[in-house]
Image (cartoon, rainbow, N blue to C red; front, side, top):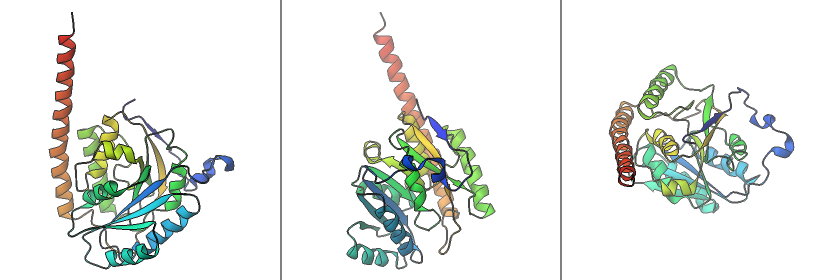
Length: 275
């Protein structure tokens, strides 16, 4: 089924309590690449990475943490370089200049070497513990995607997100609870077979559109969203918003034209082979 979605609508933050103890994931049989796009996150990046490292060490047997430094002007790269020197599970990918959120994810996806790829923001607003529940569903679905419970953002960011959500639904036919939630688990092979094209804030919408277009299934799960402790969000910058709109209109037109061409080719083949 194209873009099949199943959603957990409960508001409990204790997702593990939904399952009996013997249903909870123990040591994962899947290897995992964790992608963290980071831009000027020096105040929180060490805590984010070390927390992920500690949590995954308790249940994931084979994992790597890839921090993509997207042209940061602070000490983000230096901090990760120091952590990576002491820990073979931690890796740094650096962009010489800021190329955008989507470009950082694309670089991370290209670097991933494990069976599954998971990405989340590096700003400390997500709880890595929630990922463990995602592994309950990854063998039944092609992807597991999060939606933020009680989103901890300003009213202006929430209003912008609501408008963007409606626009994405109208232009691309994507029906999910939280398009841009940066807490998603996918198969690395899928990302290899369907490389993403957008380089800005449009990347999550493209990812969901590609899942639906290729007939993949996904499960939606609620995840905690925490207040930002330091640093500054860049998603509301005018330049970021304008780039997202440019990419949305340009690529939605391109993708619709590709689908239209495929439909015409299919119709021509059917006509040719009809007696």
